[in-house]
Length: 186
Image (cartoon, rainbow, N blue to C red; front, side, top):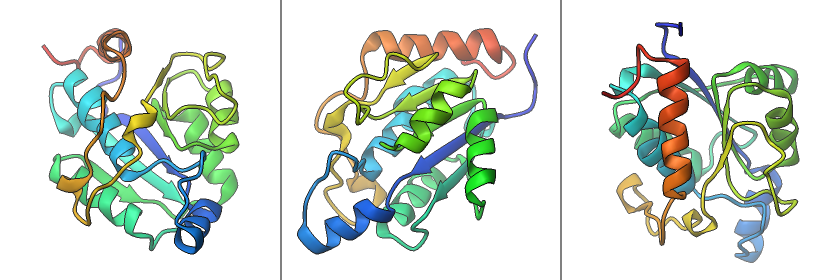
């Protein structure tokens, strides 16, 4: 069982309203998830689960395409050897892609929370704005400590703490092994 095509990953980077507030007020809002969290989700949860970065195809979607965070995420993924494309989807196309992808890497957003509930694949999300995302099927959570980017390059987007629990990291590996054995790390 399992497909031989690469895993279809959609990464939703919420920035629109949050980015404006960050720039105006310098506030770290509860809905903000920095580049380090998105990069860590791939580097520390997905890449160890697959045999090669070529096993992943990431479509990044955001409403603020020219933001520095988007540039940092794109550069960081490319440095990891992962194929990534900045998508120009409509809201409906974005929702469809999120609900039908193999993996959803979700920003802190009600939009991705709803997609997470309606999907069957793996959802990797930051802490829910509702306090608990355990209602999402096959869900693992990126630690809140992942919210800082200390510089202007992907290598400076580091975590101040663990990305996820060892249990969640194991769950991602087991999910890839069961759903995509052709791409699973040996």
